[in-house]
Image (cartoon, rainbow, N blue to C red; front, top):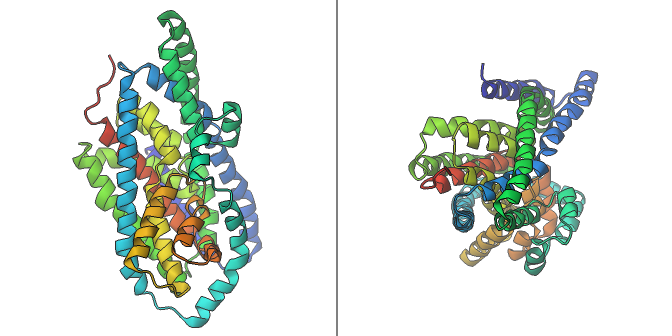
Length: 415
């Protein structure tokens, strides 16, 4: 039995065990979650501990191994354009489908008041966090870290990518003999990191099962009414976008057979779905890019870390649908200009979404403000975000892999 199938079975088994426990207060549930919770956290932490050395090493190796250093700049420029187009399309789909579908959800006045009343407390932390979102100028300055070691410790991936690429470009200018010595060491770090990742991924069925049981116990089966409708709609649009846009783009534009692409993206999707973190899925994506899709080194080693740090196609859907839903709850009428503002703001903020659970919700405050919706509404979305975040993150990872095969088309492996 393949590892992918084992992981998928573990995911389904975890949900099958966890969902019936949603309304239980038994000692069995308490003890089970007390055991599985740390196991799931250990699995995610084990994956994430490989991210920093893996990203730095694959970027340096990818740039220095490119037959033409200008290929990195060319791929990076094409990637940014593709990211913006994809997120714009996702935001447009969110607005066009979310508006009529959310209008069909019946709203009970007492239920709406209850949701509003319970939102303020859980929203406080998110609103406070949103105040720390940097301005455009601050974000631009942060791309060049004064202390790359601190950026690595803080998990600031985009500044770390800039530092790694700059170092690699400078290394290309060094005399071949000395450059080869450094690259050999970095290749050793990359190989060791990949070996560690492969070892951790052999434990993926256990880790995914340990993550799925608490998730199932938390979400249950009783999501009804307005919140249930929102969850179904945003999750459904994410699935529709993946199947109707991302997979066809990989097949038609990237010219990768459907079965090959589906097999390559499934391990990362499974980790993203259960762990709700695109960064946690990064090692699995790198493994699939090299072993299953066999894409050029420059694509795998440069593009995938870049996409994982800034490309959040699921955020384009999640933010627009979330804002439209809150507008209904708070009785805010949105005109065409408001919907356009929401879409544009969602596109811009999506590139600063952290690769952690609930990242899209945390940075949604500017989008709400652009539509005149109370920021306290964030609390409502946070309370219902477990399931949508699973689908958004899976869509993000699918988008990363789609971008890789599209941009790899026409590139050649160095000889």
